[in-house]
Length: 532
Image 1 (cartoon, rainbow, N blue to C red):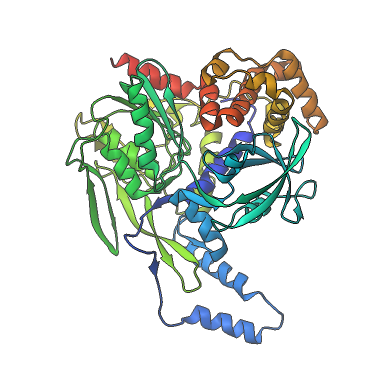
Image 2 (image 1 turned 90 degrees about the horizontal axis):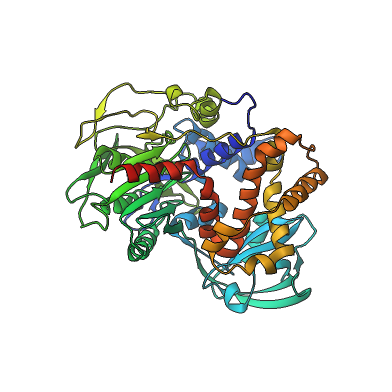
């Protein structure tokens, strides 16, 4: 393990942890969300006494939220309370759409910059372009006044059919352009990218298991099939989970009929078994699944089923380790609780939930893996449940208790780590520079019409890299040593190139570029090639 701890990677792992807790494995109710009524208990009685008799004024709503959160924290890490004001946004990620004008944005230098106008959305239809700056929304000036993402969401999102006036500044023409935009329903896609990595092998990246993920997968798969797909790499790295039903629909596409995919059970939930039912689109081709420490819940359901049935090869690092199932319950005021109601088990009867006896250890688990060297050395991989379980076809030994353990380990690549990279990554300077650089060179870069040509041919110049270093220093970073500069140069250049590709070709552009140096993807391709 590198002697120099790379501080920016743990930040990413902390983010993945928070995503895992937010989404996780969710049972989708057959009808409306379950509503709980009943008589008032001691907690409500106490809150009323405090409101009427306490010595100082208190915000009872805040006190109520803290009480509920404190109560749930005593149960497990994934039972959560969602206030009314946050519930809609929490559900949007799983339902697969929201209502707004349809732009992807970043806040750069206190200004809202449009990264992309989403396909088919109101903003795109009116001509909003990547690189445009939003400087006014209705009567609110939103440039240079400390604008935040939360404020942008409140201003631009709204009920479908409602109108919003947006003033845009377009740097390419130095014009201010007013738009009256009628909000509409905007899809949130969970299949981020799909393309052929070679003549026979297709690649599909899934970021979450939402309501429409299965349909998106089928669309992507069928397009790749037309391009000659024989092998498939399914990328679930960083995927925090989602709906249980979505996971089982996807598993059904890879396994033959009447095979157990997963089962769940809890104290108040009888055992429920999920079997394959339909003819899948890819039951016989060669399959590899990419996972890492950010792959949780529904990602582990799918990976576990494929591994237990010896259907494909699992490539990467030990997954998150979340084997709990949540069910939503609506409270009287419209807020909701996602309560853990069951554990899930893979076909070999493994429960992959890691211990949460210590809340502190659970919260810092991914950082602990990093510091212990597990992410770089398979020999240091922790085994929490030594009970051997056996795969259904080949009888291979597999383990539970801490996630899905890969069949082929791929270490975390720290070869590019340096103090300079830690500084620029911690301050999000690579993205800021990429957006600005594309802004100033948009004509020449967008002149490359095909993504494939850009991915293969375009190279960021040494002069551009030196420009980035000067930019980073002006932003407060320490000027790098020659050794640090060379160590991180290739990584930073590739990141800038990929982020610019994302602005032009969206997520597909980003992944096609960034994966030119993806050791996990290369390992999966080699594994499928060897098995031919």
